[in-house]
Image (tube, rainbow, N blue to C red):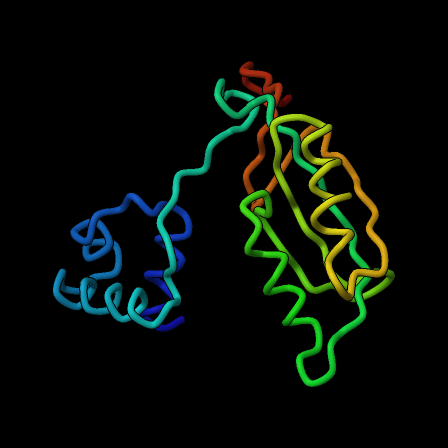
Amino acid sequence: MNDTDEILDLLRENARLSVEDISAMTKKSTEEVQAIIKKLEDGGIIMKYAAIINPEKDDIHKDMVRAEIEIQVTPQRNKGFDAIADRIWRFPQVKSLYLMSGGYDLKVIIEGETLKEVALFVSSKLSTLEGVRSTKTHFILKTYKENDIVYVEQDRDSREGVTA
């Protein structure tokens, strides 16, 4: 593992680590760590630092409706899937967009305030885009784990195990 990978791993685990903490953990000077982080930011490898919020405990957003939409499209000549993907990701409702293999081409994760709002977005915005052949919407009912973060409370027995 090189210096860059080590610092990236530390920041993936906890983006709130200070340069001084990273310096102590990697046995590098603070100047070296700052230079590596700046290079990662300038190169677009580190794009953003963000807090991970449990949606079930966030009073403002806990009632948001999330849906996964499978989209089959006709790729454009000389542009493939990129042209339609570029049009889709620009909608503010779109939180994630993926090119997929298998039975459909694009997977979109969207958010809205109500089921009706999400349904209207799919029917009036997504499905009417030129090149979209079909959509299939799946509403997300509960998130258990996302991006390696477990959102459900785990029952843990706090008693010590006894061995004979």
